[in-house]
Length: 454
Image (cartoon, rainbow, N blue to C red; front, side, top):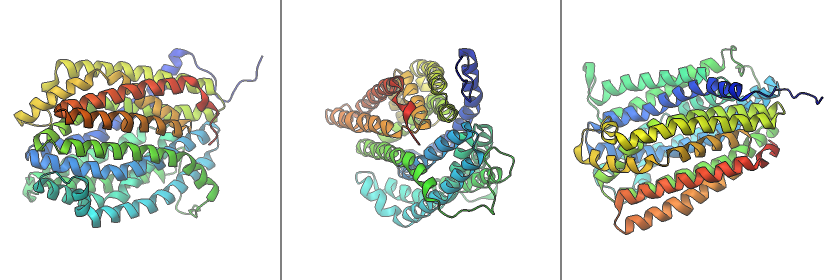
Protein backbone atom coordinates (compact mmCIF):
# COMPACT_ATOMS: atom_id res chain seq x y z
CA UNK A 1 0.00 0.00 0.00
CA UNK A 2 1.37 3.41 -0.99
CA UNK A 3 2.12 6.21 1.44
CA UNK A 4 -0.90 8.56 1.70
CA UNK A 5 -0.40 12.20 0.78
CA UNK A 6 -0.93 15.06 3.22
CA UNK A 7 -4.37 15.69 1.76
CA UNK A 8 -6.65 12.67 1.45
CA UNK A 9 -8.18 12.23 -1.99
CA UNK A 10 -11.88 12.87 -2.02
CA UNK A 11 -14.77 11.18 -3.79
CA UNK A 12 -16.59 13.15 -6.49
CA UNK A 13 -19.46 14.28 -4.21
CA UNK A 14 -16.94 15.33 -1.56
CA UNK A 15 -14.95 17.26 -4.14
CA UNK A 16 -18.15 19.01 -5.20
CA UNK A 17 -19.02 19.87 -1.61
CA UNK A 18 -15.51 21.19 -1.01
CA UNK A 19 -15.73 23.40 -4.09
CA UNK A 20 -19.20 24.67 -3.21
CA UNK A 21 -18.31 25.42 0.42
CA UNK A 22 -15.48 27.66 -0.71
CA UNK A 23 -17.24 29.04 -3.79
CA UNK A 24 -20.56 30.28 -2.38
CA UNK A 25 -19.04 33.02 -0.19
CA UNK A 26 -16.73 33.92 -3.10
CA UNK A 27 -19.74 34.21 -5.43
CA UNK A 28 -21.53 36.48 -2.99
CA UNK A 29 -18.26 38.41 -2.59
CA UNK A 30 -17.98 38.84 -6.36
CA UNK A 31 -21.64 39.83 -6.59
CA UNK A 32 -21.19 42.47 -3.91
CA UNK A 33 -17.92 43.64 -5.47
CA UNK A 34 -19.43 43.95 -8.93
CA UNK A 35 -22.61 45.49 -7.65
CA UNK A 36 -20.51 48.50 -6.59
CA UNK A 37 -20.00 49.15 -10.31
CA UNK A 38 -23.53 48.02 -11.12
CA UNK A 39 -25.05 50.43 -8.61
CA UNK A 40 -22.86 53.24 -9.93
CA UNK A 41 -24.01 52.43 -13.46
CA UNK A 42 -27.69 52.24 -12.51
CA UNK A 43 -27.61 55.52 -10.58
CA UNK A 44 -25.39 57.43 -13.00
CA UNK A 45 -27.57 56.09 -15.82
CA UNK A 46 -30.38 58.25 -14.45
CA UNK A 47 -28.21 61.31 -15.21
CA UNK A 48 -28.20 60.63 -18.97
CA UNK A 49 -26.06 59.02 -21.67
CA UNK A 50 -23.18 61.56 -21.39
CA UNK A 51 -22.66 60.96 -17.66
CA UNK A 52 -22.94 57.21 -18.19
CA UNK A 53 -20.36 57.28 -20.97
CA UNK A 54 -18.01 59.45 -18.85
CA UNK A 55 -18.21 57.04 -15.92
CA UNK A 56 -17.58 54.14 -18.31
CA UNK A 57 -14.44 55.72 -19.76
CA UNK A 58 -13.19 56.62 -16.27
CA UNK A 59 -13.81 53.08 -15.03
CA UNK A 60 -11.83 51.68 -17.97
CA UNK A 61 -8.84 53.84 -17.04
CA UNK A 62 -9.06 52.83 -13.38
CA UNK A 63 -8.82 49.22 -14.53
CA UNK A 64 -5.09 49.94 -14.90
CA UNK A 65 -4.86 50.03 -11.10
CA UNK A 66 -7.03 46.91 -10.85
CA UNK A 67 -4.61 45.09 -13.17
CA UNK A 68 -1.67 46.09 -10.98
CA UNK A 69 -3.43 44.79 -7.88
CA UNK A 70 -4.56 41.59 -9.59
CA UNK A 71 -1.02 40.68 -10.59
CA UNK A 72 0.31 40.96 -7.04
CA UNK A 73 -2.69 39.34 -5.39
CA UNK A 74 -2.41 36.39 -7.80
CA UNK A 75 1.05 35.65 -6.44
CA UNK A 76 -0.15 36.27 -2.89
CA UNK A 77 -3.13 33.91 -3.12
CA UNK A 78 -1.18 31.15 -4.89
CA UNK A 79 1.72 31.21 -2.43
CA UNK A 80 -0.45 31.51 0.68
CA UNK A 81 -2.50 28.55 -0.60
CA UNK A 82 0.66 26.47 -1.14
CA UNK A 83 1.94 27.34 2.35
CA UNK A 84 -1.43 26.57 3.92
CA UNK A 85 -1.65 23.20 2.14
CA UNK A 86 1.86 22.39 3.39
CA UNK A 87 0.91 23.56 6.94
CA UNK A 88 3.53 26.34 6.86
CA UNK A 89 1.52 29.17 8.42
CA UNK A 90 4.45 31.43 9.37
CA UNK A 91 5.61 31.34 5.77
CA UNK A 92 2.07 32.29 4.67
CA UNK A 93 2.19 35.28 7.02
CA UNK A 94 5.53 36.34 5.55
CA UNK A 95 4.10 36.19 2.02
CA UNK A 96 1.20 38.44 3.09
CA UNK A 97 3.56 40.97 4.71
CA UNK A 98 5.85 41.16 1.72
CA UNK A 99 2.88 41.57 -0.61
CA UNK A 100 1.74 44.57 1.42
CA UNK A 101 5.21 46.12 1.19
CA UNK A 102 5.52 45.53 -2.56
CA UNK A 103 2.01 46.54 -3.52
CA UNK A 104 1.77 49.49 -1.17
CA UNK A 105 4.64 51.26 -2.91
CA UNK A 106 3.20 50.56 -6.36
CA UNK A 107 -0.24 51.78 -5.25
CA UNK A 108 1.24 55.09 -4.11
CA UNK A 109 2.83 55.64 -7.53
CA UNK A 110 -0.42 54.70 -9.29
CA UNK A 111 -2.46 57.08 -7.14
CA UNK A 112 -0.19 60.04 -7.94
CA UNK A 113 -0.32 59.10 -11.63
CA UNK A 114 -4.12 59.18 -11.82
CA UNK A 115 -4.57 62.30 -9.69
CA UNK A 116 -2.10 64.49 -11.59
CA UNK A 117 -2.43 63.11 -15.13
CA UNK A 118 -6.18 62.51 -15.41
CA UNK A 119 -6.86 65.20 -18.04
CA UNK A 120 -4.14 64.30 -20.57
CA UNK A 121 -4.78 60.60 -19.98
CA UNK A 122 -8.41 60.65 -21.06
CA UNK A 123 -7.66 62.90 -24.04
CA UNK A 124 -4.90 60.61 -25.32
CA UNK A 125 -6.85 57.39 -24.83
CA UNK A 126 -10.25 58.57 -26.11
CA UNK A 127 -9.61 61.39 -28.60
CA UNK A 128 -12.90 60.86 -30.47
CA UNK A 129 -15.17 61.06 -27.40
CA UNK A 130 -17.38 64.12 -26.92
CA UNK A 131 -15.81 67.02 -24.92
CA UNK A 132 -18.37 66.80 -22.10
CA UNK A 133 -17.72 63.06 -21.80
CA UNK A 134 -13.95 63.63 -21.60
CA UNK A 135 -14.34 66.30 -18.93
CA UNK A 136 -16.54 64.03 -16.81
CA UNK A 137 -14.18 61.08 -17.22
CA UNK A 138 -11.19 63.18 -16.06
CA UNK A 139 -13.02 64.25 -12.90
CA UNK A 140 -13.99 60.64 -12.19
CA UNK A 141 -10.40 59.36 -12.61
CA UNK A 142 -8.91 62.11 -10.42
CA UNK A 143 -11.29 61.51 -7.49
CA UNK A 144 -11.23 57.72 -7.61
CA UNK A 145 -7.44 57.88 -7.95
CA UNK A 146 -7.29 59.28 -4.42
CA UNK A 147 -8.58 55.95 -3.15
CA UNK A 148 -6.10 53.68 -4.96
CA UNK A 149 -3.97 52.96 -1.86
CA UNK A 150 -6.88 51.84 0.37
CA UNK A 151 -8.28 49.93 -2.59
CA UNK A 152 -5.04 47.94 -2.79
CA UNK A 153 -4.96 47.28 0.95
CA UNK A 154 -8.53 46.02 0.68
CA UNK A 155 -7.93 43.58 -2.19
CA UNK A 156 -4.54 42.38 -0.82
CA UNK A 157 -5.98 41.56 2.59
CA UNK A 158 -8.81 39.62 0.99
CA UNK A 159 -6.42 37.80 -1.37
CA UNK A 160 -4.30 36.52 1.52
CA UNK A 161 -7.38 35.32 3.42
CA UNK A 162 -8.74 33.52 0.35
CA UNK A 163 -5.42 31.76 -0.16
CA UNK A 164 -5.83 30.28 3.32
CA UNK A 165 -9.33 29.08 2.41
CA UNK A 166 -11.26 31.89 4.15
CA UNK A 167 -13.79 33.26 1.66
CA UNK A 168 -16.35 34.37 4.26
CA UNK A 169 -14.34 37.28 5.68
CA UNK A 170 -13.73 38.82 2.22
CA UNK A 171 -17.46 38.43 1.57
CA UNK A 172 -18.20 40.46 4.71
CA UNK A 173 -15.66 43.19 3.95
CA UNK A 174 -16.97 43.52 0.40
CA UNK A 175 -20.47 43.83 1.82
CA UNK A 176 -19.36 46.77 3.96
CA UNK A 177 -17.84 48.41 0.87
CA UNK A 178 -20.96 47.85 -1.20
CA UNK A 179 -23.41 49.14 1.41
CA UNK A 180 -21.36 52.28 2.07
CA UNK A 181 -21.14 52.91 -1.68
CA UNK A 182 -24.91 52.65 -2.14
CA UNK A 183 -25.62 55.01 0.75
CA UNK A 184 -23.06 57.59 -0.38
CA UNK A 185 -24.30 57.33 -3.98
CA UNK A 186 -27.85 58.11 -2.90
CA UNK A 187 -26.74 61.06 -0.79
CA UNK A 188 -24.22 62.60 -3.17
CA UNK A 189 -25.44 61.82 -6.70
CA UNK A 190 -29.00 62.99 -6.14
CA UNK A 191 -28.51 65.38 -3.20
CA UNK A 192 -30.63 63.54 -0.63
CA UNK A 193 -30.92 64.35 3.10
CA UNK A 194 -29.52 67.86 2.70
CA UNK A 195 -26.35 66.82 0.84
CA UNK A 196 -25.41 68.70 -2.37
CA UNK A 197 -26.47 67.19 -5.70
CA UNK A 198 -23.09 66.34 -7.24
CA UNK A 199 -24.06 63.97 -10.04
CA UNK A 200 -21.07 62.16 -11.57
CA UNK A 201 -18.70 63.78 -9.06
CA UNK A 202 -20.81 62.32 -6.27
CA UNK A 203 -20.45 58.82 -7.75
CA UNK A 204 -16.66 59.18 -7.80
CA UNK A 205 -16.53 60.45 -4.21
CA UNK A 206 -18.78 57.59 -3.09
CA UNK A 207 -16.47 55.00 -4.64
CA UNK A 208 -13.44 56.52 -2.91
CA UNK A 209 -15.14 56.66 0.49
CA UNK A 210 -16.21 53.02 0.07
CA UNK A 211 -12.61 51.99 -0.62
CA UNK A 212 -11.41 53.66 2.60
CA UNK A 213 -14.10 51.94 4.68
CA UNK A 214 -13.53 48.56 3.04
CA UNK A 215 -9.78 48.76 3.64
CA UNK A 216 -10.34 49.57 7.31
CA UNK A 217 -12.51 46.48 7.83
CA UNK A 218 -10.26 44.14 5.79
CA UNK A 219 -7.09 45.21 7.60
CA UNK A 220 -8.84 44.85 10.96
CA UNK A 221 -9.58 41.21 10.09
CA UNK A 222 -6.03 40.55 8.89
CA UNK A 223 -4.52 42.03 12.07
CA UNK A 224 -7.08 40.57 14.48
CA UNK A 225 -5.04 37.44 15.19
CA UNK A 226 -8.14 35.28 14.67
CA UNK A 227 -7.56 34.22 11.05
CA UNK A 228 -5.36 31.53 9.51
CA UNK A 229 -3.27 34.34 8.05
CA UNK A 230 -2.68 37.02 10.67
CA UNK A 231 -0.25 39.90 10.84
CA UNK A 232 1.08 42.03 13.68
CA UNK A 233 2.35 45.60 13.67
CA UNK A 234 5.56 44.47 15.36
CA UNK A 235 6.33 41.99 12.56
CA UNK A 236 9.34 42.45 10.30
CA UNK A 237 8.27 44.44 7.22
CA UNK A 238 11.72 44.86 5.73
CA UNK A 239 11.91 43.62 2.13
CA UNK A 240 12.85 39.93 1.92
CA UNK A 241 14.48 39.21 -1.44
CA UNK A 242 13.64 35.50 -1.61
CA UNK A 243 9.96 35.94 -0.72
CA UNK A 244 9.60 38.86 -3.11
CA UNK A 245 11.24 36.77 -5.83
CA UNK A 246 8.68 34.00 -5.32
CA UNK A 247 5.80 36.48 -5.40
CA UNK A 248 7.12 38.18 -8.53
CA UNK A 249 7.79 34.84 -10.26
CA UNK A 250 4.04 34.31 -10.29
CA UNK A 251 2.94 37.95 -10.35
CA UNK A 252 4.98 39.25 -13.30
CA UNK A 253 3.37 36.90 -15.87
CA UNK A 254 0.01 37.53 -14.17
CA UNK A 255 0.66 41.26 -14.41
CA UNK A 256 1.55 40.92 -18.09
CA UNK A 257 -1.67 38.95 -18.61
CA UNK A 258 -3.68 41.63 -16.83
CA UNK A 259 -1.85 44.26 -18.86
CA UNK A 260 -2.81 42.47 -22.07
CA UNK A 261 -6.41 42.26 -20.90
CA UNK A 262 -6.64 45.91 -19.85
CA UNK A 263 -4.83 47.27 -22.90
CA UNK A 264 -7.05 45.06 -25.04
CA UNK A 265 -10.15 46.32 -23.24
CA UNK A 266 -8.91 49.89 -23.62
CA UNK A 267 -8.36 49.42 -27.34
CA UNK A 268 -11.76 47.73 -27.60
CA UNK A 269 -13.27 50.72 -25.78
CA UNK A 270 -11.51 53.13 -28.16
CA UNK A 271 -13.08 51.31 -31.10
CA UNK A 272 -16.52 51.55 -29.48
CA UNK A 273 -16.15 55.17 -28.34
CA UNK A 274 -15.79 56.16 -32.00
CA UNK A 275 -19.33 54.86 -32.64
CA UNK A 276 -20.93 57.67 -30.59
CA UNK A 277 -22.27 58.30 -27.10
CA UNK A 278 -25.38 56.12 -27.40
CA UNK A 279 -23.45 53.11 -28.73
CA UNK A 280 -20.85 53.34 -25.99
CA UNK A 281 -23.48 53.82 -23.29
CA UNK A 282 -25.25 50.73 -24.67
CA UNK A 283 -22.00 48.78 -24.50
CA UNK A 284 -21.56 49.84 -20.87
CA UNK A 285 -25.10 48.73 -19.96
CA UNK A 286 -24.68 45.40 -21.75
CA UNK A 287 -21.43 44.74 -19.87
CA UNK A 288 -23.11 45.42 -16.55
CA UNK A 289 -25.92 43.04 -17.50
CA UNK A 290 -23.43 40.34 -18.46
CA UNK A 291 -21.85 40.71 -15.03
CA UNK A 292 -24.94 38.99 -13.63
CA UNK A 293 -23.53 35.82 -15.21
CA UNK A 294 -19.87 36.68 -14.75
CA UNK A 295 -20.07 36.59 -10.95
CA UNK A 296 -20.53 32.81 -10.92
CA UNK A 297 -17.40 32.27 -13.00
CA UNK A 298 -15.44 34.76 -10.90
CA UNK A 299 -16.53 33.12 -7.64
CA UNK A 300 -15.63 29.60 -8.75
CA UNK A 301 -12.34 30.93 -10.15
CA UNK A 302 -11.40 32.23 -6.70
CA UNK A 303 -12.33 28.87 -5.18
CA UNK A 304 -10.28 27.02 -7.81
CA UNK A 305 -7.22 29.21 -7.21
CA UNK A 306 -7.24 28.48 -3.49
CA UNK A 307 -8.11 24.78 -3.67
CA UNK A 308 -5.66 23.93 -6.46
CA UNK A 309 -2.85 25.75 -4.63
CA UNK A 310 -3.65 24.03 -1.34
CA UNK A 311 -3.81 20.59 -2.96
CA UNK A 312 -0.44 21.07 -4.66
CA UNK A 313 1.04 22.36 -1.40
CA UNK A 314 -0.19 19.18 0.28
CA UNK A 315 1.47 17.07 -2.43
CA UNK A 316 -1.74 15.87 -4.14
CA UNK A 317 -1.78 16.91 -7.85
CA UNK A 318 -4.65 14.52 -8.67
CA UNK A 319 -6.83 16.27 -6.11
CA UNK A 320 -5.80 19.62 -7.62
CA UNK A 321 -7.02 18.47 -11.04
CA UNK A 322 -10.31 17.17 -9.63
CA UNK A 323 -11.20 20.38 -7.80
CA UNK A 324 -10.27 22.53 -10.83
CA UNK A 325 -12.45 20.56 -13.25
CA UNK A 326 -15.35 20.30 -10.80
CA UNK A 327 -15.33 24.06 -10.24
CA UNK A 328 -15.33 24.64 -14.02
CA UNK A 329 -18.21 22.21 -14.62
CA UNK A 330 -20.46 23.76 -11.96
CA UNK A 331 -19.71 27.27 -13.19
CA UNK A 332 -20.48 26.26 -16.80
CA UNK A 333 -23.91 24.96 -15.76
CA UNK A 334 -24.75 28.17 -13.88
CA UNK A 335 -23.47 30.50 -16.59
CA UNK A 336 -25.16 28.44 -19.29
CA UNK A 337 -28.46 28.99 -17.48
CA UNK A 338 -27.75 32.72 -17.30
CA UNK A 339 -27.04 32.70 -21.02
CA UNK A 340 -30.51 31.26 -21.55
CA UNK A 341 -31.99 34.16 -19.56
CA UNK A 342 -30.02 36.60 -21.73
CA UNK A 343 -31.64 35.06 -24.80
CA UNK A 344 -35.19 35.04 -23.43
CA UNK A 345 -35.42 38.20 -21.28
CA UNK A 346 -32.74 40.66 -22.45
CA UNK A 347 -34.91 43.81 -22.33
CA UNK A 348 -36.02 43.23 -18.75
CA UNK A 349 -32.42 42.71 -17.64
CA UNK A 350 -30.87 45.75 -19.33
CA UNK A 351 -33.75 47.94 -18.10
CA UNK A 352 -32.40 47.47 -14.56
CA UNK A 353 -29.55 49.83 -15.42
CA UNK A 354 -31.07 52.52 -17.62
CA UNK A 355 -34.37 54.07 -18.69
CA UNK A 356 -33.06 55.45 -22.00
CA UNK A 357 -35.12 53.65 -24.71
CA UNK A 358 -32.43 53.93 -27.42
CA UNK A 359 -29.75 52.52 -25.11
CA UNK A 360 -32.09 49.69 -24.08
CA UNK A 361 -32.73 48.78 -27.74
CA UNK A 362 -29.01 48.54 -28.58
CA UNK A 363 -28.10 46.70 -25.35
CA UNK A 364 -30.84 44.11 -25.88
CA UNK A 365 -29.36 43.08 -29.23
CA UNK A 366 -25.77 42.61 -28.06
CA UNK A 367 -26.56 40.84 -24.79
CA UNK A 368 -28.27 38.14 -26.87
CA UNK A 369 -25.10 37.76 -28.94
CA UNK A 370 -22.88 37.03 -25.94
CA UNK A 371 -25.42 34.62 -24.42
CA UNK A 372 -24.15 31.61 -26.38
CA UNK A 373 -20.57 32.06 -25.17
CA UNK A 374 -21.40 31.92 -21.45
CA UNK A 375 -20.44 28.23 -20.81
CA UNK A 376 -17.13 28.79 -22.62
CA UNK A 377 -16.57 31.94 -20.58
CA UNK A 378 -17.07 29.82 -17.45
CA UNK A 379 -14.22 27.51 -18.49
CA UNK A 380 -12.10 30.52 -19.42
CA UNK A 381 -12.59 32.18 -16.03
CA UNK A 382 -12.39 29.15 -13.73
CA UNK A 383 -9.54 27.28 -15.40
CA UNK A 384 -7.53 30.52 -15.57
CA UNK A 385 -8.01 30.72 -11.79
CA UNK A 386 -7.01 27.09 -11.36
CA UNK A 387 -3.82 27.55 -13.38
CA UNK A 388 -2.96 30.69 -11.41
CA UNK A 389 -3.38 28.71 -8.20
CA UNK A 390 -0.80 26.29 -9.55
CA UNK A 391 1.54 29.17 -10.39
CA UNK A 392 1.19 28.53 -14.14
CA UNK A 393 0.54 32.18 -14.98
CA UNK A 394 2.66 32.15 -18.15
CA UNK A 395 0.31 29.90 -20.10
CA UNK A 396 -2.69 31.99 -19.04
CA UNK A 397 -0.85 35.11 -20.24
CA UNK A 398 -0.09 33.59 -23.66
CA UNK A 399 -3.67 32.41 -24.20
CA UNK A 400 -5.02 35.83 -23.16
CA UNK A 401 -2.66 37.54 -25.61
CA UNK A 402 -3.77 35.27 -28.42
CA UNK A 403 -7.48 35.68 -27.71
CA UNK A 404 -7.67 39.40 -27.05
CA UNK A 405 -5.08 40.75 -29.48
CA UNK A 406 -5.15 38.00 -32.08
CA UNK A 407 -8.94 37.56 -32.24
CA UNK A 408 -11.02 40.19 -30.44
CA UNK A 409 -9.32 43.41 -31.50
CA UNK A 410 -8.54 42.44 -35.08
CA UNK A 411 -11.99 41.00 -35.69
CA UNK A 412 -13.79 43.88 -33.94
CA UNK A 413 -11.91 46.51 -35.97
CA UNK A 414 -12.67 44.65 -39.19
CA UNK A 415 -16.39 44.22 -38.45
CA UNK A 416 -16.81 47.82 -37.26
CA UNK A 417 -15.05 49.04 -40.42
CA UNK A 418 -17.49 46.99 -42.49
CA UNK A 419 -20.35 48.85 -40.81
CA UNK A 420 -21.57 46.27 -38.27
CA UNK A 421 -20.96 48.70 -35.40
CA UNK A 422 -21.67 47.58 -31.84
CA UNK A 423 -23.05 44.22 -33.01
CA UNK A 424 -19.82 43.40 -34.86
CA UNK A 425 -17.70 44.27 -31.83
CA UNK A 426 -19.73 41.99 -29.56
CA UNK A 427 -19.57 39.14 -32.07
CA UNK A 428 -15.77 39.47 -31.95
CA UNK A 429 -15.79 39.44 -28.15
CA UNK A 430 -17.96 36.29 -28.05
CA UNK A 431 -15.65 34.44 -30.44
CA UNK A 432 -12.64 35.43 -28.31
CA UNK A 433 -14.26 34.11 -25.11
CA UNK A 434 -15.19 30.82 -26.80
CA UNK A 435 -11.71 30.19 -28.21
CA UNK A 436 -9.96 31.03 -24.93
CA UNK A 437 -12.31 28.73 -23.00
CA UNK A 438 -11.39 25.83 -25.29
CA UNK A 439 -7.65 26.54 -25.13
CA UNK A 440 -7.59 26.79 -21.34
CA UNK A 441 -9.51 23.53 -21.03
CA UNK A 442 -6.89 21.84 -23.23
CA UNK A 443 -4.05 23.34 -21.18
CA UNK A 444 -5.54 22.22 -17.88
CA UNK A 445 -6.17 18.67 -19.11
CA UNK A 446 -2.60 18.50 -20.45
CA UNK A 447 -1.38 18.57 -16.84
CA UNK A 448 2.06 20.17 -17.16
CA UNK A 449 0.96 22.83 -14.61
CA UNK A 450 1.29 20.17 -11.89
CA UNK A 451 5.09 20.40 -12.16
CA UNK A 452 5.39 24.19 -11.83
CA UNK A 453 7.75 25.21 -9.00
CA UNK A 454 6.80 28.38 -7.09
